[in-house]
Length: 454
Image (tube, rainbow, N blue to C red; front, side, top):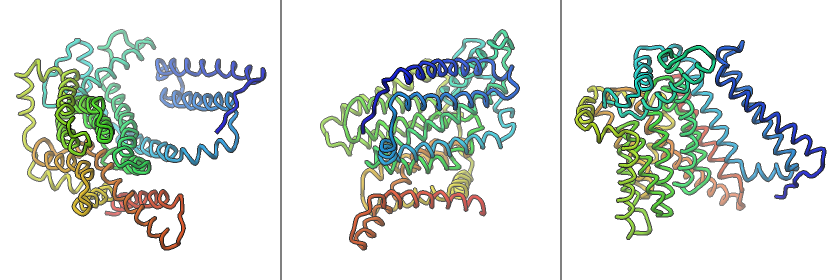
């Protein structure tokens, strides 16, 4: 694939004007971020989206004028890059569903729990006191909300609306955090795509996992609620990505990153500590048997580093940290039925795919299957024993459930493609990918139909 760089003066002049326009658009986007909510006749977020769309179009025009790609180039890019296009589709669908969840939730951000959380985040900035009042919840998500409140203050202060962080309205902070949840959800989609394609060693598995997660009701319905599982799920997905990479490479660096992100995830949601078990079990499918102790030691230290950096109170305020853990308490007696009903009635397709993976783990006796299944299974048991019965708590394992559920879809499509090719006596390059996407859509439709009619 060859590209011709532009060389005539006319194109160079166009590029100069285009570069100036892109710089102005970038400056306009920054100004709208600072003042758009207060001086524009339309909501600032919509104006900002329009400017960002123009920026994307401008960058695309810049690339076209620079390289002058022909039809053949686009055709080759489509053939080679179709998984990325479907990933983009998954992100767009996931973004739309998550945005709709925020819109249809109404005044969730104005409810007492959300306001109390926003006030706690605002108090961190107002008093410069990063010591959480309680360790019932790990503090990393609260620290994230404090950072959001600081950005809110910068925006409103630049517009001359307030003079100090005390002037912020808690509802503005809680509303902003819901959009941070949306962004975390989209980043989790990308991390799951990357982790699944590495773990199952096939490109199409990443696409299936991303589509399953993008349309998972369990993953997006709680976006408007200010719960730490959205941040923890993203960090968990990053940890899994490095675990998947480390399983093949056996490199120390991958396991260090996996442990570090596991520590950060635990600083957002305590149950993420189950990642340590996942890390430990992954060492037994390595080819470099002699390095297991060294990898385990380094990943454990990296875990402690991540946990301590994000939540130093667990070590510096141990006398408050342990009572916080104890105060979590037991789950209600009907927690198991509650979670099972919510999962089966709202994400039946995803639950069925996960169940097929569990069945195949017994049949195929493949170690990677058990590695993908172990944390969701243990977490499902954990939430039925400890903590309140909140459906948002299932958000934490939806990335791993989607990755696990991708396997039977890809496996069944491959078997079907092999059978059809053998029967026809010829190979079809797109058959496996086509069957895989068709089965993925089928799994998604099962969830939609059960959710709609049952």
